[in-house]
Image 1 (cartoon, one colour):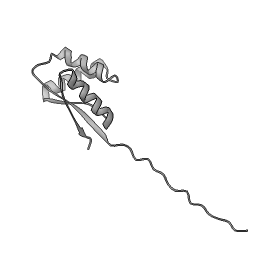
Image 2 (cartoon, rainbow, N blue to C red):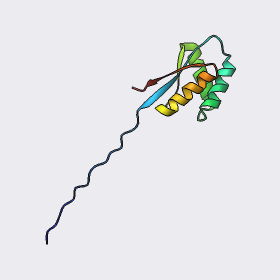
Image 3 (cartoon, rainbow, N blue to C red):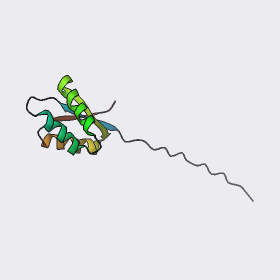
Image 4 (spheres, rainbow, N blue to C red):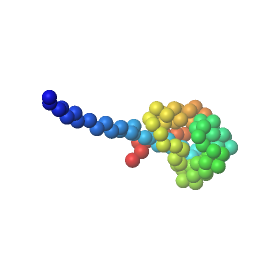
Length: 93
């Protein structure tokens, strides 16, 4: 009788690359509109977070909205653009 040793292959999950959704400052939209658009576009944001993102974009010309998978990032970016905001995505480093 022979004994066979089976090696269990190691399966490690590789996390999907994440992307940053960025909001750019503009001179056209009101602060209230920006905050409201952020809240309706990214459901996980709270009112204070949306205000903070808006103020950061206003002060520094750019702000991080959220980091997420590419498909979600594209959706959020396009939705922000459809509401008149300037938004881009970039790979997270």
